[in-house]
Every structure is written in C-alpha cells, then in structure tokens.
Amino acid sequence: MRARDLAWPCTPVQPDATLREAAELLVRERTPALVVVSKDGSPLAAVPASQILAAALPDAVREDSLLLATGVDASLDRDVRTRTASLRLTDVLPEHLPTPAVVGPNASLPEMTAVMGRTGSPVVLVVDYDDQPHLIGTVDATTLLQQYL
Image (cartoon, rainbow, N blue to C red; front, side, top):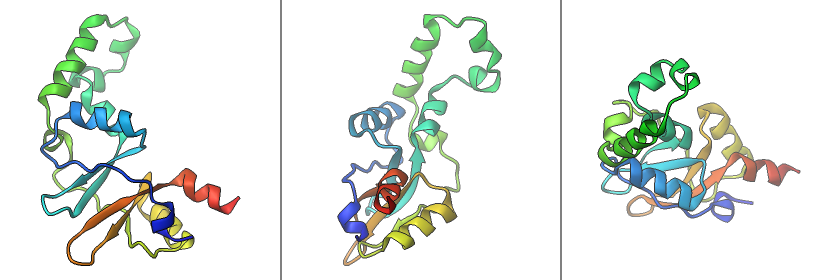
C-alpha cells in the first residue's frame, strides 16, 4: 500500500479561517486534525482538533480549570460561540508552526509510520508536488495500524 491508496480526502483551510469554520470542518469531516495551507496550497500545519477546542475556551477557563469545577453556566457556551465566530486561526496558532508531517503519494507504510512517529502528528499529509502543491488527503494513525494487523 502507498500513501495515495490510504489517503482520506480532506478540505484544507487557510490561516484566516475563523475558529467556527475550522470547528465545523472538523466535525463535518470527522478528522483528527485540521490541515492549514497557504494561498498557493502549500501545507503549513496539521492542527489537532483538541487545539482548536482549547482555543475556543475563554482564557480564564484555560488558565484555571477549577472554574469548570465550580459550575460554569450557559454563559460559557455563549462565550465559546462568540470566540469561535470572532477569532481566526492566525489569532490562536503559534507564530512559528511546527513542520507538518508530509509524505509524497508513493510513500510506503514504514515511511508514513516513521514520519508520524518522528513528528508526533495525528496525521500525515499526502501531498503531490508536480507543478504546484496538491493536497491529496491525510492518513491517520488508526489507518496505519489497520494495515499492520
């Protein structure tokens, strides 16, 4: 099996997408990570869904989890909805993004496994660089594990 055979199609987003758009995409595609690309389609990052979820929480809640234990009410839901609508990925992602786990369409199972292990990414991005970058899709750890069973 090669990367192109295992790649699951995904919809990439650009850094100016709102957190709401990112969250809706993650939910719709049921993927473990959001693929962020530049205007020319070059992969910039694979952002875990948990990072988007954490960014949606108000700063006070992220910094003091005891606030959740004291019984936060519906105002938290409203705050999260407001944050996801107003914040953009560029507002919450680190200035220097970690290099995404990228493989070519002909990458083998061991190559994909090694890249995923080395980077700690929840997915590897399968990208074809013929003329310009073309994101074929992603391969997640579960898919790789399935191939070894």
